[in-house]
Structure formats: C-alpha cells, structure tokens
Length: 303
Length: 244
Image 1 (cartoon, rainbow over the protein chains, first blue to last red):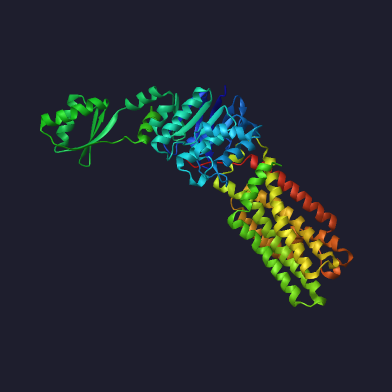
Image 2: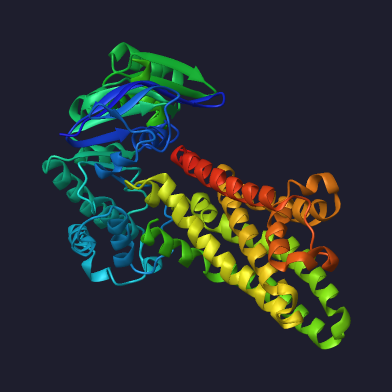
C-alpha cells in the first residue's frame, strides 16, 4: 500500500504561483490528474517525483518526504514527458541500463520482464532513434517498471500517441492499477482520463478544482449551463420566443448576435429549431460559445 | 563509484563533436612540439620548451580540456533532461558526481596529461625532467579543473560560457601576468609540482610558481575535494521541471 500524500502544497516561481495550496491523497489504483495546459499538473508531478521542493506544504510517500531522498526511487517509477533519453543504442540497452542503475540482482531478467510487459520484445533490439512516439513512450514505461515500483508517475503519457497505442497504454495502466500499484498520470483530455482512471483529480490554474469519481465530475461538467451564439434573421424575436418557452435561462444581444444560456443542452437543441420555425425566423448559425476545456474547468473552479 | 554511470558518461564524452574538440588541441600541441624539435637548435630548445609547455600546454590546453571534460560529463544531460533517468534511481548523488568526475579526469589524463608528457619528450627528451614535470602538473591541474567545472555545470546552465571566460581570461591571461592573482590560479598551484619534479634547476629554467609547494598542493587537494562534495550536494537539490 503506497500512498502519496500532498498536504497544503504550494509552489511558486518568482511571482508566478504554479500550484496553489493543494491537498490530495493518491492511493492504489489509477488516478487521473486532469487539467488544461498550464494548470500546474507537471509542477505537481515534479514535486511528487522528488524533482522539485514545494515552496510550502509537504509531499510524502507513506509518511516520508520525497524531496532529497534518493531511496524513495526504490518505490517510485517515473515516466517523464520529455523525450530525451540516454545516448544509448537499443531499447534493450536503455532498459537494461536503468535496471543496472537500480542495482537489481538480475538486471537482464528484470529488463526482459519489463520489455515483455509493454510488448516491445520484437523491437527491443532496434535503435531508440528509429522508434515512433508511442514506442518511445512504451520503452520509457518499461524503464520505469523495471524495478517493479509500487508507485508509477506518468506526465502526459498519451501525448502524440495514435489511437491504437493509446488503447494499449490504457490497458497497461488499468492492469497496473488492478495489481495494486499507485498509478498517477496527467492529461488535459477528459475522455482519456475517464476511460482509465477510477479517481480523478482536477487542477485548474494551479488550484485543486475537484476530485473524486469520474462520473461525478462528468455530471458536473455536462450539467453546467451552456452558452450558445446564434445568428438569425430576427435575433430579438428569437431571444424573446426562447425565453418565453423556457428553453433558455438568459439572453444577451451583442454585435448582431444573440448569446443564449441554456441549463439543459438537450432541450435547447430540440426546441430552438421548433421555435424558430414557428416564429418564421431563419437560423444562420448556432454554435456553442464555451465548449473549450478551459471554460469547462473554469466553471468547475467557480463553483 | 558506479561503473554503469561511468560507462554512460564516457560514451557521452567521447561521442561525436566532443571527441573532435578533445583531440584538436593535443594535436596542435604535438605538431608545435615537432616544429620546435625540427627548427630550434638544441642550445635554446629547453627555453622554448618551457615556454610552450607553460604558456600553451598548462596555461591554455589543460584548462580548456578540463572545461570540455568537466562540463561535458554532466552538463548536456542536465540541459536535455535525460538526467532524470539517473536521478530517479536510489543512487547517492555523491556517487553520481564522483563517477562522472573520475571519467572526466581519465579523459583529461588521456587527452591532456599524456600529450603534454609526449610533447615534452619530443622537444627536450628527458632533460631536466621537464617532460615528466609538466605531465604531472597537467594531470594535477586537470583534476582540479574537472572538479570545478563539474560543479559549475551542476550549478548553472551557462557553465560552458562562464568556464570559458574563466579558463581564457583568468588562467591564461591573469594567471600568467598579474602577480597578485597568480596565487589564486590552479595553473600556479600545479606548477609547484612541476617545479618539484624539475628540482634545483627549476628557477634557472624559468619554471616558477607564485606559491610555495605545500600551499599549492594543499590548495589543489582542498579545492578538488570541496568542489566535488558541493557538486554532489547541489545535485541532490537539482530542480527538474517542465514548464507546463
């Protein structure tokens, strides 16, 4: 049972606050660290990896701090986001080198086992420089798993992977979680996280915005009020009709467009065309105004 | 000392462009020595040899090679982030620094100390122990330079530029010309060893140092040990972040 505990952790760089008073506990199973770019996910993972001291608060693994404690890496495996690896030739040599650096009794056997786990045996004798992004990610994963760590930390592991590679890595993470390992990975894509992670921690602008079961977070995200921008032959009449119907909760007229806020997006989608047709109004354009991840996250933070 | 780290370091140090940099200066030194051997007559060759071995070999070649080997042993890994694979291991940071330093010193021995010895032999043979004296001096200075430049590479990403300014301005210029500053020059400390090997003729031959022998040796040892220890300690606190 390896538990990573963050207590009131903050990290600032000069005047910029990257992580702001975050407390969370990461236990066995797969946890997804979700948030838009720049939310402080990498900074948080760097602190959990012992590569960065918190400016305030503590990061501990099973009660012992991770910063400036080399022995913690017997328990932690890290898959960094950066591509740079040792200037070694083959995937096999790379994983074997990592096994040797861990001082394992039988580094060769450990490397073979780790490479099998990520299904890279066929390509293990090839040069790392010939690998695709997904293969590099897998060989990095093998290197992180070579000492059979209880904790696995992955920074944006799905970045740049094709769908098949993504699926494979997802399976791998789920298996790791089932084996009782504490697996934490970061992502800015909700779909990735909800397919793999039992628990989600949401970070927005350095703050811990939400945590818990993905269904709960999904519900919070879909049930928030949605904004739509509409252009039509008669914006005023359309806005009045929609308000009277109850399909929208607020309207705003700006620059020849009408912005409608709907509490229930499905109802909005079915009633808007009906209302327009009834009033003889032509719809030119209907588009969601705030479907970017940032606005979804901003909503979560604002709650 | 960790042999896996040492092997990795050696591979990085001798890879591609760096190997060229490491060979260029020793080749120049040996060609220069050959030229001296062929063109300068025997009576004044000792004087010329002391000049070449002192100003060019010990004053420029050794600090530059120390810079290339010392920063090259750890700097590129910190720059490209691949040091993360080394740091995410239960290996003492002092062991990491020590392993890298040993390799850097071995490289300086091979690419600086040995060529200096050969250059000396080429120019004046075994006369006055000049070749061995400067060879020993080069090895001692190279060791200290390596430790200082490994520390510099751990402390700052501008290690090469700062090191270059130090090597060229301080060691080559100031260390050779300004009397007060000479006491703080690695080159002068190492020259005390050369002076001891050469023996009583040293002064007459122009092999001099600004410091006494025991002070030179103590400074070489102390600076090397302190720099190595501080580098290990700094590596423990090395911050690795990806701006996210």
